[in-house]
Picture 1 (spheres, helix red, strand yellow):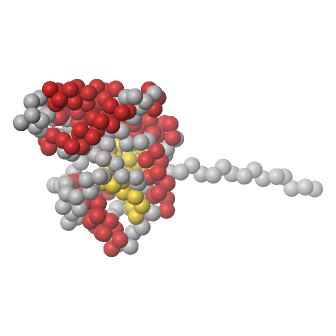
Picture 2 (cartoon, one colour):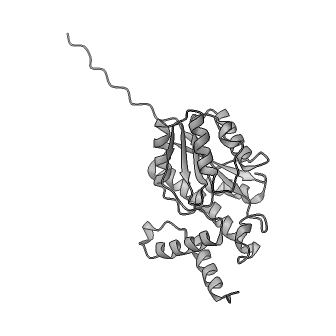
Picture 3 (tube, one colour):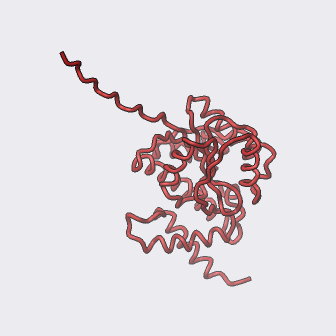
Length: 254
């Protein structure tokens, strides 16, 4: 009598990872201050707000289109109770947490601690200054963290736009000169000293200086020539950049 054939059990679904999007509220005079002048505080805040919405829309699209096991959180500063963040929670299907800490390192470490405390085994943080970051970078980050302890997305200014960990590593966020060109290198040195295996994503430009903004304007102008379904910039941000570029061109040179 032949034995009944056993059905192979389906492979388990990967446990969701957490992605925390670090964002400040778009308050004039408190965001993108290094762009002022030539931008006005209102223009800088409007652009920043558009970047926040961009990263929320694009991470949502990455999860849906690439079927990524990512739960999205918006890490809010100064507080998740602000109306802007409440609207984002409702419209962008994102969960809110507060940024807590005296500097960027402390706030990132606290976000990792909070999200690992919720049971996630892989946690990522991404900034909002990369509005056209390719969706595939999130897929790459997830894959790289399978075989590495740390994943970093290098920014062209010497910092990083993304970091992913498998467990809390507070040492990676202390004694670092934030907002300098040594952030990435120092983080890599600390990881190596801890015996951690680090992987790098492709480098990307974030937007801190007027030179960064001009490069983003050029990239947006080139992006507008592509077919609609291949464009990386939202029409909202592309329109804002086009308006700013026109205004800056019309200003007399100092």
